[in-house]
Structures are given as structure tokens and as C-alpha cells.
Length: 475
Image (tube, rainbow, N blue to C red):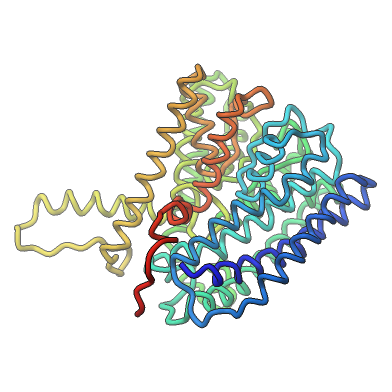
């Protein structure tokens, strides 16, 4: 690990965050929130000063994979910390302000606040704005996480890349930014056209395209009127759960690739399955009418599958079967290269292909050669191992976190739902995440959100002593 290299890129990141902080600063000034405004101004100034010093370090010709991973992890750790002090201006303690900041930047949407309707517009905008740039950040920085993962990197770049990591990340960022801005503008025009007030439309679009889920109402999606706006908002969230580079390929005329994209088809299929299963469960176990159940199933099923975290029902009040169906959707998530969380559809498909291969090999001769394939492409063994390892790590972290909640006396299904929601950065809640939650359990959920967002490996690289101690082996 070359510390000057990490410092150089973190300096560039600090400068970017300083510029991004200007959005909430302007919102606070317009809202007349003087305390939050000067805190945001102070944070922006410190970030700009520190970033300008670090950015003077000569940029390396070559960026190592472990350096990219460390930068990725530190981005999602340091950005929420930088915004914690300004968030405390809304009468929050440090832990609750940190929780809100982590939930925002990781695009989770969980909250420990008893109510958001008593909070000022500057605070509400800041949360949604952080979700928006957090969603963009994870799409761009995911290339660093997947640098040595050939299948996933190929999907992000749309080709086999021979570029250096820093160069390819910049090229990828420009494409994704264009798509991201276009989706945001489309969503904003759509919601304004449906009659939402400008501020309400803006906050909800920022949270939807990033699949974040923060809203201006304690009732979440149920507080949004008219009903057509709820449908439109979930449509925007669904667009955010699709791999953003796929839109770029579509614009370039590669419609055949888009139609054949197995993750896109899988996402649409799972949204239909989860929505239908939720509707059926609400009818059979909760006694709802079919008209109510179909509407609630569609909205909340898409929310769970895309990881957007908007809800139109109280998950604390529904039977465990309904929670279990939503939990399955949250765990899988959307496409690689999207703003959503979960294990991602690509890895689920890899797991299913591995299971299929195991079954096939039981009927093949010993000398027969059988490979794991997606479409016509053979998956490298390392890609398969990485995909399976990440799924195992998701399950392990969820299990350990769940155990902490069980030992604290929380109801098993509600606790599992909350932990999966945090780790898969979804934001649906059974009400456990609240102001009265024990500080240690808030810390568990904060760790879950960070681990799930950077997909474990980046934070593990930071904690690995060999990252910082020892001699670099030259190529």
C-alpha cells in the first residue's frame, strides 16, 4: 500500500465532497436554517482545504487493486463522518446523526428518528442529497471493488478493458453520470407533472433514483398523494435498480444486448414474483381484499426487490409470511452497476449455475468437462469463487448481527428483517430502528450498512495487516 497514492485520491474525493456540500448549504440558507448553514460551510471549507493539500501529491501512473479498495471503503466511512456534525443541527445526538448520515450515503434509508415531519426542509433535503451522490458513488466505485472480477467488470464497462484502473474508472464515471442525471431529470419532470410540490418531488426523486428511500412523510409511500405519484416513484426506483451502463449501451444502439441482458430480465421477473407473492400472502394471511393486496404487493414488492425502501404498509403489523417474502427480495437486490444493494442478481445467477452444474455432473462420466456458464460465456473459476464467497459473507454478517438482536430480546422475525434490510441497504423496517434502540445495536446496524454497501471486501482489506505492513512485490 502506497500511502501517498491513497492520500492523493482521498484529496480528490474531499474536493468533490466540498463541492457536493454546497447543495445542502444553499438549501439551508434558503430555508433560513442558520445553524445548519454555517456548519455545512465549515465542513465544506475544511474538506476543500484538506483536499487541496492532499491533491497536490503527484497522481500515480498506476493504481493497485488494494489501493482502490481502500479508497472505496474510506469514501463510505469518511463521507458520513464529515456530515455528522451538520446533521446534529437538527437536535440529534452524535450516534443518531451518524446513523442518519451512514444510512444516507449508503443509500439504505433506515432511520432512528421518531418523526421526520417535525424536521426542517434543509435537513430533509440534505439526507436525500446524500443518498443521491451516495448512489452515484457506489456505481462508480464498484469498478474498484470489481477490478479483478472479470465477469462483473466486463458488465460495467461493456467490454474487456485493457485500461488502467484509474483511467477506466473516470471513463465509466462520465458515462454513468450522464445516465444518472438523465434518470433524475426524467423522474423530476414526471412527479412535477403529476402535481407534486417542487420540494416534495425533488426529495423523493433524489431518494428514488438512488434507491435510497428517505421521504418527507412518516408514512413513507403511503403519505404520497396522488396514488399515481407512488406508482411513478416506484418506476423511477426500478430504473435505478437496472445496471446504469446498460442505458449507455442502449443509447449507442445496442438494443439487442439490452433485450438479452439476463440481469434485466431477472430483475423484472423477480419483481413480478415478489409482488405477486406479497399480494397473495396479504390476502391469505392478513385477510386483505384482492384490490388492496395487489396494489400493496406491487408497490412494496418492487421496493423490496430494488432496495429502494419505500413502503405503503406497516411491516411491523403484517404476518411473518409477508415479511419473509419481502426479506427474500431484499436479500437478492438488483443488478450489478446499479444503485441498489443485496447480493445482486448476477451472483444469484452464478449460484444457480453452480447448483445446476453439481446436479449435471452427477449424471456425467468422470472424464466429462462441464463449466459454469452464463449465456454463451464461460465464467472463470475465480469469478465463481468470488461470487460464492460474497454470498457466504452476506449470510455470515446477517447471522452474527441477528444473534446480537436476539440476545437483546428482540422478536426473531422482526430482528432478522431489520438486519437484512440494513446489510442489503434497503431501508424497510419493522420499527426496531428507532430512537429507543440500544446504542450498541445502532452501532451493529451502522456496521451492517457500511459492510453491505462496500460488499465487505474493501473494509476487510483495510483491516488486513498485510495491506499496510510489508514490502510491495514489483510487477
